[in-house]
Every structure is written in C-alpha cells, then in structure tokens.
Amino acid sequence: MDNVNIKILAEALNLSTSTVSRAFRDNSDINLATKERILAMAKQLNYQPNHYASNLREQKSKTIAVIVPELANNYFSLAIQGIESVASAKGYHILVYATNDQFEKEVSFIQHLHNGRADGIIMSVSGEANDHNYLNELAKKRLPLVFFDRVYEDIETPRVITNDYEASFSATEHLINQGCVKIAYLAVNKTLSIGKTRMQGYIDALKKHNITFSDELIIDCTNNYKENIDHLKSAFTELKPDGVFTSVERLAFATYYACYDLKLDVPNDIKVIGFSSLEISPLLNPALSTVTQPAADLGKTAAELLFKMLENPDQISPNTEVILKSEVMQRRSTSK
Image (tube, rainbow, N blue to C red; front, top):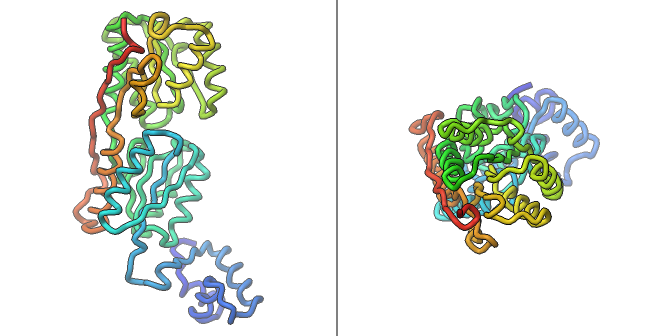
C-alpha cells in the first residue's frame, strides 16, 4: 500500500495515533504486546515512520544525503568536499553513503532516507539494474534529488555532468597523435551513462583517424583491484596494445602495476591516459596523462542546484542539465 501515514496505521489497529507514535519512539509507557502488534502491522502495510516530522513537523532536518559508488577514490572525495562547502554555508550537514556499486545498497539507502532523515539527496548512481522506479517514490515524498557524474537516463531529475564524450574523444585522439595505432579501452560498466558516452568518444576518435575498431580491445574490468591487475596482464600479453585509455581512475593504477609486472616501459612500450582527478598524477613514475574532471566544482554545482530546489522548487525544471568541462592534461605517460 502506497503513502501509508500514521493515521491510516492507527485506524487499521483501532488505536490512537499517539499510541502508535509512542511505539516507534520506544517509549517505556507502552505495553510490549501492543508495541509488537503495531510494528507487525507497520511492516505489513510498508509504513515508514518519519521520526523527524513527528517531533518537528514544520522544520527541516538540515541534512543532505550524498550517495556515491565509492569513497576510496579521489574524484568522489573532491566532489563531496564541494558539496560540503555549499551545505555548510547554508547551515546544513551531510550524510555520506557508499554503495560500492551495489544496486541493492542503493535501493536500501533511498528507502532509509524516506523517513525524513534528509531534506534532499545528491547521488552518483551504481549503474546496475534496468528498473529505477523506486526513485520515483522520492517525488511522492517531495524529496528533491540531483544526479551528478553517473546518472540514470530514464529518471527525470536535475543533473550535473561533465563533457564525457568530447573528453574521451580528445584523450583517444591524443594517443593517436602520439603514434598509437592499437589502443585498448578499459571499461568497468558499459551500461552506465558515463560508460556508454566515454566508449563512444573512443570509438569515434578511432573512426576519424581511419583506425579499425576491434571489440577485443575493449577490456572489461571489475571493481576488484587484484583481479583487474591479473586480467590486464593477460590482456596486454595477448593483445599487445601500444596505447591504453582507462575509463575510470582506479584502472590507471591497475595498468601501471600490470605494466611493471610485465616489464613494459611506459611510455616507450605502451602509452597510458585515463580519467583521473588525482592530485598526485604529476608525481607518478612516469607522470600520468589524465582527463581531469572538475570534481569539486561538480559537487558544488550539484549542491547549489539542490538548494535551489529546496528554496524554490517550482523554478527548477526536472530536465535541468548542467555540463562542466574536463581537461586533457598531457604528461610523460603519453610522450613520444
């Protein structure tokens, strides 16, 4: 049953709303059997108590939820810093949730946030599954949502992204201009919005320069660090690419480790470029060429958009899309 409130639950139990409320507040002045009956009916009706609204019905939680695929990633750390700077200036706190690219966790977090724990959500999606209708429940709860970086194309909500296609095209073209003719593209999830867009930029750059696209040079990787290194060592040994384009940050490290183990010299044997916002990229050996995204600005812009939705919800179109530009930084890993 959708939109079950405390009044409907109380009527179903033939109890007063104050009695039901005390059960969820774990008051000591309520009979244990009555409490268990209330909780059982709540579960049956899929009722989720709004603890904040029950105490401060007209006030806000003054909290923003941030959902990201991972925390051990400099890009998302910088984005969270950007979000926090805006939230702090508005007198808000942030709650950070990491899905580890698991769709089940993403759904669980969203359902958890229905109870009034946060006034809005900023999310970079896990990318799994085809049915994202659970997010439409947020609209019923009037809980604003802003996507950033990774988005679900079938969900209509404001988003802040980067020019992934153009950046990917430029990065691939840079490898070609440096003499590469057999370029491997390292992918994690090709169903993600960024996965499809970045791969298309790679493919179109090859086409422009009359380099035949080979599906075997699209190397599917996972979220497991060691598995990726072993997989890349096998792929590089078999395919012998002269260039590598990593679609996400962690795959650049895996590439460096694989090349080290195989005694492949970067950039003389193989050239490497990848999406990364790592501040230490220039300090790696060799310095890593990157597609550097404005991660902090991305988070800041997403937060500013969310607060506009909170303050003037009718003035922000659900089709709002803000695109920030990434920059190709050429360093020694792609030098001739």
